Image (tube, rainbow over all chains, first blue to last red; front, top):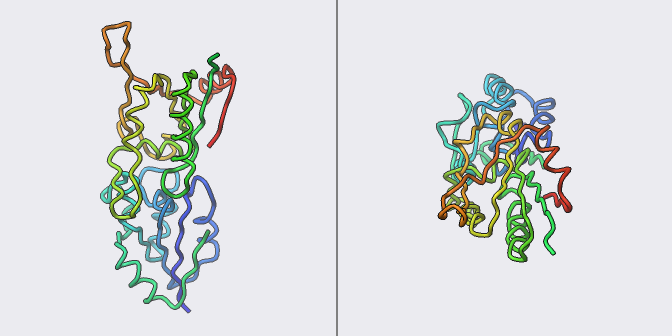
Length: 102
Length: 133
């Protein structure tokens, strides 16, 4: 049963991303949304951990949430894929279930 | 009787309502002619990023309002250096906020002060009221 993990909290504020990484399975994917998108930006103290996540899993970030926060799509961690809302829907249907980390 | 108010902003915009609520209380306090200082630390530094475009998420972009703070005589906006650094940001990534000094022919002066945690502690200790968002 493959899982899409959505993370909507800033990694600086909550440990959702770290907890997710501890229990994620092979074949699962991560999608950063809302304040979670800050994790995908480059040059932060979490960038290396996110880069490592892209080596083992497919990692996505929601473009409209990046733009709302003034974060540029070319300023994100290498290997992270930007999706729009249609892409978000596709991901939800593509994976067997969704785990919304709150 | 004006008091020294400090508003400490520690949350990112849009994900929660804290940033917007804080901004509203700040403007109300300044309208009552209190001496208002702002702090942006932790995820609060994200409130001031340039180029916010919220059309895609259906929320109001309230970031242009920060540029009006100078008109409310808010001259002291402290940004914690450590918070910027751990997020890979510099002052160039943030809005440039100014106030106009009527005693100096309305010259535009920087409102933003980049401070270390230690420097911020000293400013914070000097306040009469501190409100955290």
